[in-house]
Image 1 (cartoon, rainbow, N blue to C red):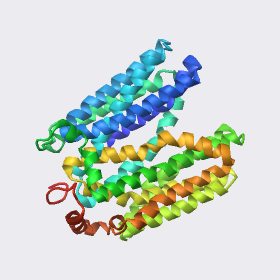
Image 2 (cartoon, one colour):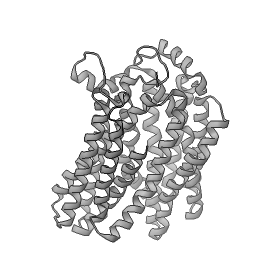
Image 3 (cartoon, one colour):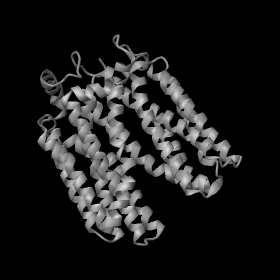
Length: 415
């Protein structure tokens, strides 16, 4: 947790600073967009490949190699910026490798949770990681803006230093057997590489989760872009526009650190129905954001939206508990890719919606949030997920009917 908090914050700082620094150097918006897209493509590819590597090789070795590659790449970006080199291909090569390596490391970290955390503690682990993610959404841009004021290269030097610090901390895992080489059956390389996708296609539980992950990722991404576009379209000052994404981060931290722990301790309701209810509440909040015109009520509702969002954490924890350890990397990285793919589509959809309906275009996000709630309602396997105390028995029952991806008995993760 400490290693990846440092790594995520420093890389978030560099990612935020990348387009600004390149515009400073070239004043070319088209090439800046190309660089940002290149970094995003690297992230998606690294997530998928990292999941395969996590299941095939020593996780600690992959973590160290990918961390080193990310650090060297960000150091290369800083040298390029320091020398005033404006050739877009030099920048693109570095940020592609940086995005790929960083996401591969994150995929390995996610795949390792099931191996080192007991089933009863998965929700707590998810809460900690979610709080870290929201914290980074605030720390990264704040650090980037401050360091850019010092020097154009400073954010990228900080990213390289952060990755070095991450590696030094992860060296402590070198002798940990749970992070060592993986054992798997004799299968062909293509079958192994696409094992996560095949498992999802063959297993009704995982296929249902894939649909949920894709749909639940689109709503927030579209909402953020649509509101920002509509406020800019209305001529709102930049500091007011920035308040909305900042509110997303603040709400997420409040929900992860304050609301979710109390919720997990005091509420012991069936996870499937509880998640469906939370998504319905989120739908109402998003509809309110679309109907409101002033930035103040929109900002308040944005805080409420992301404060409630962490409460679906038990639903995600069930997915981690359900996937066998030998498939954790490939299945979870595929789920992550499905959840983040809408980030590529959201800007275009938001531009069309705002262009056609102005501020009311964000109302479409309410429909997008209602879709995963409807999926859970219509899919009994998800709707009937019980309280965490009953997960083992429930997984055994559904694996006998639908669990093509599951192999062997399930025990606690520490077993």
